[in-house]
Image (cartoon, rainbow, N blue to C red; front, side, top):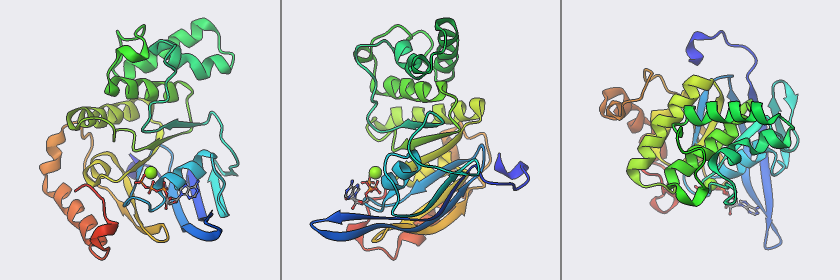
Length: 269
Ligand SMILES: Nc1ncnc2c1ncn2[C@@H]1O[C@H](COP(=O)(O)OP(=O)(O)OP(=O)(O)O)[C@@H](O)[C@H]1O
Ligand SMILES: [Mg+2]
């Protein structure tokens, strides 16, 4: 997708983003000068071992926590704090159990004062995109984990965010459902053309989904390498994981991490 576009101003830019937390009275550097650019319509994954600061990076972009230094620039403007233009989907579904699937998807639109009829239309459209047509009136407890995550994605997309931020959204799902969801998110991305910034520690997931992979290092968390992913699209068939190019990309990533000690590595290969 990004290949066909002329290189312009990126949609999102992280410039020298660093983050220090206080731990037991001492300063603890979690992120050191993270630089990353994401173009409009791109699907970018951050990949890295546990504790390297993937979630912190995403939370800074979301505006949930503030960086200690550096800047986050979205649409050419410096960002501070959260907003509906940044959709979020995390591992926990965070759906409201007392509302139906449709009512959950309509939540953000309701808060914006969108009319009932329009809310219905948008929610219906987004639920269809994530493959939840027919489950609109189910309550959250009546649907599976995979369906809940689809509903969470539909809810985020319903607000037409400039960027969708996803933090290991499929980690709590069983292996087959996780694979189904990976295909589903690619389909939703192709239909909506929403820019996606996706955190994972699953190497195959990053390769399967992304245009670009930001491989992170740990202690302190920093960008180790940014890899362009030129695997052809569409990639709706998981069989592409057995392709030579897929294997080469996996080897490249394994090489990048081979310098890390085993105990620091919890990547799924
Ligand atoms: N609010 C906080 N206060 C203090 N330390 C924090 C806070 N949030 C995260 N950290 C620390 O920052 C480091 C990076 O955390 P982060 O959650 O970003 O890791 P991660 O790469 O997402 O790991 P995982 O793959 O396990 O989710 C960790 O050492 C964590 O303990
Ligand atoms: Mg995390």
